[in-house]
Image (cartoon, rainbow, N blue to C red; front, top):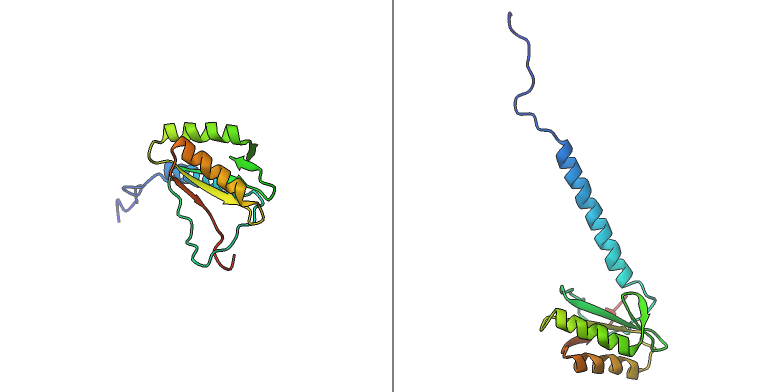
Length: 138
């Protein structure tokens, strides 16, 4: 039985770098989820449509919220129509032919406010815009 001492396990892997990377990935996804929640957190009641399809996010979407009184919000802050036009124009310049606008309007707002946002989209050359609706049962 001479020489029966066991040495260190051959090929052991240090798990600390893997744990560090996993921790950073979890933090990244938590922050990314919070940004998405903030964009959709304004208290707007969407109308329902029987043929509503779930909104599939594209990478270049610009959200415009229209509340019950017809006030526009972009990025969670109040924005007047001339400033909205400047922001959409800059977005169209930054993302030519790929910029889309999602209009989230309260179901109780007057339609003329939504049409005003649509007209601004047409004026700056953005043809990919849509008004969202709630899915049935939500």
